[in-house]
Length: 114
Image (cartoon, rainbow, N blue to C red; front, side, top):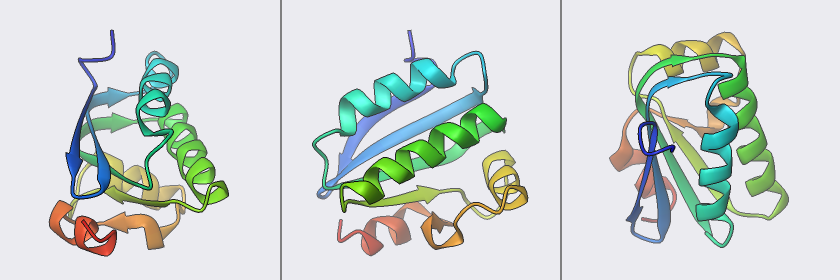
């Protein structure tokens, strides 16, 4: 059951994915399946990582795969990482695409037109 780590809502035209807790090898695949099942038809996706307390390489690979899929389909995506925190630090250390990172949900939604 992925409800412990992921929940969904809408923000304007974007599908909003809320992640929380530890995202790691133990749960990244299940979380990924839940997210893909929900965002497949979405034109825009916001992934809120501000409540993530730990993000390992499996979590980074998951995010990279989601971004790649959205890019391949010509869809828009933003990752909300806050001003500081585990997800922001890990993604910065991995040199993740900074053009996709937003500090707050309001700004990210505005960038996607939501």
